[in-house]
Image (tube, rainbow, N blue to C red):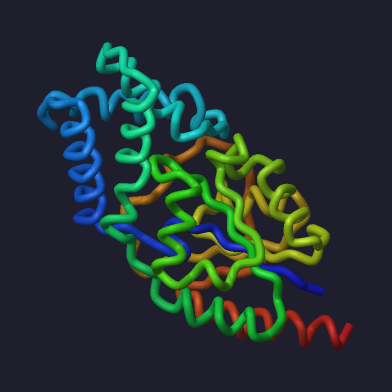
Length: 252
């Protein structure tokens, strides 16, 4: 019987339009330019190189690092030496841009989280973080009035590995205090979310958002046949799907 329901974050519960993503970049570079007393144009190449370096070293092999490490790569790309107070200022400027330009809540997200919480399910969240680390995402989820629903949240930059690695699902399971066969995972990425959850013994539902934003993971070559327990195109369809599962459990 399902006791806990866990969600992916980006493109499942929150999303960025192209405009908001560009605003995040503008905010980051404007802030960093002020700290370093330079122009945003002089930072463009290092900004791109930092993303590419992190993809090469970490994200492509499902690893993740603290936001501070991204800043170290950024400073290295700029060929600068900076003191510790400057490093701290750079990290804050880089990490919290999305707090200033908030993402959009996916339609139905708050409604379905409220309904599931009211039904007594324990709720969890796992996010591969990218440029916005866990501490900034907690602030964002609070401002979007979503964090209050979750009993546990795990962020890849704090955990050290990304979905679909089993360890990040284990971390959430332990925090929720349930077994894998008592958990359901909902996410938009067939490989990272559905396959990642299923390989741990969880039931997984594939959410196909009606409109995708920019926070989409790069495609991964794999030879897995991934078949979710269900596919939904509106988050609110999760509640009747669960009610069917409960009814089937009671009949068996």
